[in-house]
Length: 186
Image 1: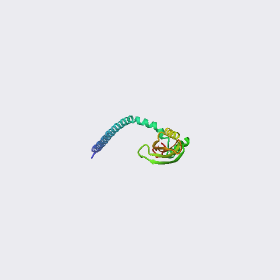
Image 2 (image 1 turned 180 degrees about the vertical axis):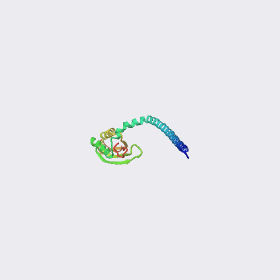
Image 3 (image 1 turned 90 degrees about the vertical axis):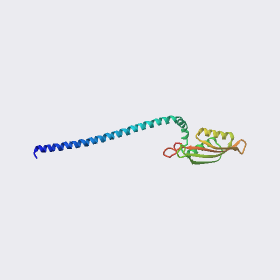
Image 4 (image 1 turned 60 degrees about the vertical axis):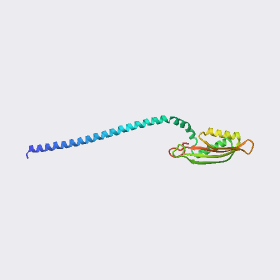
């Protein structure tokens, strides 16, 4: 084999090598384009899904606007009692402020719906015997100062003397827990 044959062989091998490399690069380019199309399709799908979710959110926000405004009006009243102990203290303070004669009182924390907004309630069972007007005004003042409470039971009967009235009262004070599980939101 002379130099010309050797040069032709080397040149042929170089051409074959370049053809092989070109085919490899072409296959890699084709795979990259396929991945680009798949990524673009995924992106378009994600953008479409995002736009659909944003439209759903806007519709839901408009539908719940009145409810959210109503809740925002009541939220300060719910935050009035941070925990059951604070609720007890508030009720006892109202009793002391108006100097109502208390025959008995009992407090119990009751678990409510775990998935709801109000997860607990403080149930206060109170028995008073005092002047008719003073006792009913106290109840009105309690509801005025703590509007989030619910009177679940109220029995009135004649007191032992003159203008006295005996009132057996059960009130529920909402306890709204925050996301961490503490009751600082109430």
